[in-house]
Amino acid sequence: MNQLDALKQLTTVVADTGDFNQIAAYAPQDATTNPSLILKAVQKPEYAHLLKDAVARHGAQGLDEVMNRLLVRFGCEILRLIPGRVSTEVDARLSFDTEATVDRARRIIDLYQGEGVHVDRVLIKIASTWEGIQAAARLEQEGIHTNLTLLFSFAQAVACGQARVQLISPFVGRIYDWYKKTAGAGWDEAAMAGSNDPGVRSVRSIFEFYKKHGVATEVMGASFRNVGQITALAGCDLLTISPDLLAQLAASEAPLTKALDATTAKTLDIPFVTHDEASFRFALNEDAMATEKLAEGIRAFVADTIKLEGLMKAA
Image (tube, rainbow, N blue to C red; front, side, top):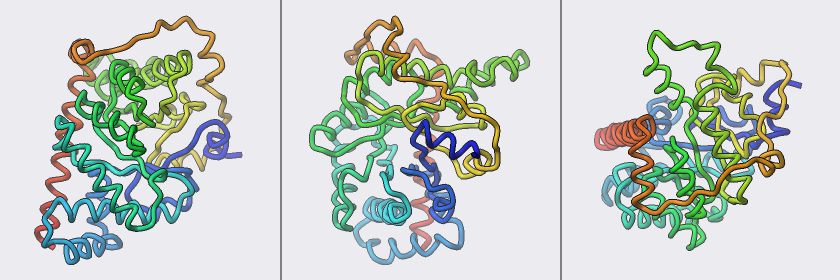
């Protein structure tokens, strides 16, 4: 049995791509997209027509509507290839605007429902800012499920659990990137690999806290740099993995063992934590890595959204 098949026995495998032609080969349960992945996809000849079609049909309604239609078109194409859910991201420029995030999420869901897609097959991706988490709490109460992304800290995970969001996406690789860059020449790759990887440790602490205290929010490790980070999180609720790393897993027959276990987590001595807005903002501020990576991640998604809008204007 290859590692991908072995992983599927322990964890729900999710494809992290906008290139839906690559999805079928790996038979994932769910799929995730983001502005950067959609931008990358529409620049390929086989997807360029999707952008042109969205502009031709909806350009008169403005760029926001064209963007919504394009994201939903990709989502619908992906849903034809998977049995589960697709994650579609709201505009990262709304990351600090609760009301606008709620409105955009509702619009995206309306468009999916117009295409005959049931609300339970869509997760609305929202950045894990305080405002984003509050928007997600409201959406969940309306029956719209959310995926809180750009999550780098325990504080963000705690607040998401309190908000009863459906799923969180802690970013393993970007946490690893920050610690590696900060350590510079002092970084010991071998010593910081596998279960010692700072990104892996972050996800494990969140997973164990949730399972210990009965938090229903699903944990989906994301943003992987290597197969070792993935195998060190076998047993996590879900893992969203790029096609390149899915291919590496499928090509390997190295043994794979369960690394995270919900039953074991229930026996651990982990104190319960809650956050209000003030304590959340303070805890996030105290975490230099999370503060920097959250801001950087939002800026990067905004930049790619603006590039995508530029392609729309030129179409």
